[in-house]
Image (cartoon, rainbow, N blue to C red):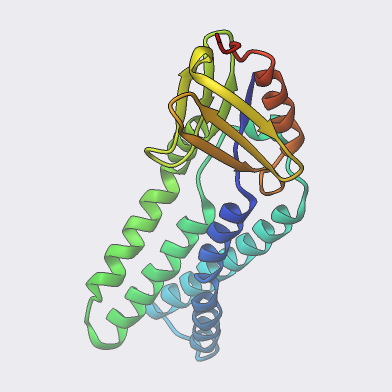
Length: 214
């Protein structure tokens, strides 16, 4: 039995980080519309169109992400999901590239830190599928005949055989896994997407714990 361990708080925090990038998009959109109203030609016209397009795409993608965050999560679908590119990161990088191009157009100066950040964001956006798949594989709860695996942050994951598990207590809010060596791992069930599936896997795990020999 394999179920994902996805924290709602963590997902909201990641989304809020991305939302912060939407603010510059409104400023850039206004700048692009203003430039277009002056009937530019050549590079100035292309730059104005690029500013408007990248800003609109980023704002639209952020709105779509907000709507998606309101839908209830499906734990099974989440586990089997195929992650593609992260369009918010890609369009944020495009907005930053537009800012760099506008600055260069005005005073022939390349803002290197902004350019570097734009390249990094586009790269991360393109590699999002591989990064997300690796994180998803790590942040899971696995129960099988060999033992128990509880994923999480580095050095917090648990991977043990049943003989090393002392107890699993599943309460209303928290589930506590205690190993015979004294180590504990606590899961905040209401914070996990698909908490019913996590609870069911832990109940199944309780039945597999080897009894203590007195």
